[in-house]
Length: 126
Image (cartoon, rainbow, N blue to C red):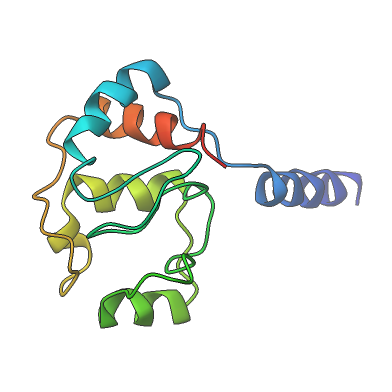
């Protein structure tokens, strides 16, 4: 019984804890330059070709209310997709492979380290 309660508590804590990336946010800021043509972060950020990415880590997909997402993104959002570190990693590595039909034309980040660093950088924006 005690072991079951401890396991349940650990699972609940993991589900409620904020998502933290394990990369280097400063390095991620440099990698994010590849994203700036379409996305903005920070105070005063506005949608461009892609949505503002403030608060994206841990956020449900398609949550930027004033952005027109692709149908596939809307469908995945309706299915409950949340941008966890794992989901963001898969998407950033190969957007078109991860989500066939996405409007995102970027080919993806080839290095796992770059993906981790960008996620760490994005996690600094609420």
